Length: 274
Ligand code: URA
Ligand code: URA
Image (cartoon, rainbow, N blue to C red; front, side, top):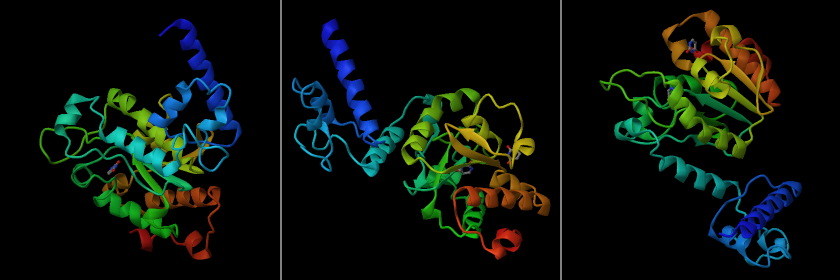
């Protein structure tokens, strides 16, 4: 493409994105209609032609600005098709992009799929997942109310099918852009990082371990981030003190997300989670 046409295209694209942002739109579903719209010669004179059906004149890009569902479906399809890490691609049964409510106020981030998750294509469905479900329920929520994702979308390969291994820093760095895109799309009010890997995946420069940092608010791209223990760690270390700390972290999360907190919830952190 000629240089002048290139720079015009880039300028038009930037202008289009700025208009979208100014009109409060946060999600743009990139499809052929939109690309055609951006390339159309009349775009410069009539950028409205490329706006979504809710706004005025839908024509060139009637489908060009999709909703959150469509944008997520597209992202999920891209995640499922990812073949960047050959050793994980050959080991995996399923890619595990994430699950839950796209309008969730609270987003839980774990480490990586384990054997159960790899088999079922859903995060946190094994033993740790059952504990996470109990925690969510104790918060007065259902699994369907929140969004649950992981730093890695593929199960880290291991020699035998028993046991899991932590993702390597390089695997985390490779995979994290998917989670960034999920977070940008879902825009939760609060992020919960489950365990050390989750918090380091989101904030790689952090040097403090989870046991020191848990319970203290951090930030990820202006979103409050609460680091807490991984449910698998709580299962391995069944002490009241740890469970209580985790529940205190969840109370702080509920407060930050604007959820009601009952007296029972304030006082009770044991029976429902044990
Ligand atoms: N542990 C995780 O970190 N993620 C899962 O999805 C399951 C277990
Ligand atoms: N170490 C971890 O990796 N996770 C925890 O939750 C606690 C200790």
